[in-house]
Image (cartoon, rainbow, N blue to C red; front, side, top):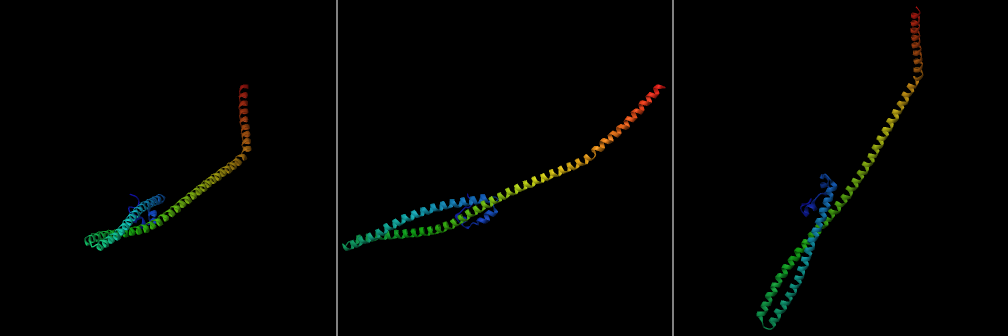
Length: 218
């Protein structure tokens, strides 16, 4: 079973309400359009059969009309010849043809009524179908617009992220340069302190050397 179970359900349906309640509006509108198009094909096929039946009844009605005229002519001929018995038989056949013609006219009226109803319903369905297709175009356009906006936002986000990383790297570089300047200020001083410390060590060694010499000379 499709989205709609009957033709009148389609005519009376609220497309906007169906789309609002759907989890996937694009899929729903596609199914709605498919259902409507299939229904139109079925209704038009039924209409074609009714038209064919109507034409057949019209041909039968023409034959019956001819028969009525012919039986009446035969009845008059029989009367003119003094054959009332044959005239009565001809009149009876004419009566049967008249009854059949009345039934055929009733069938034609019924067919005309059906075709009027179908024509009206098909017109309504066509309006619904056109509306659904317009809704589909709008949904596709909205989806495309949303997709493009998402792509733009994604690019902007990446650009912002790249900018943030660049700024962070520049900050790190500045910190490295600042630390380098601080360490550079201590370079000369560190070397001088090392030389002074070395002189102190040399004095200690010389003193120990002299002490050993004095001890040995004793």
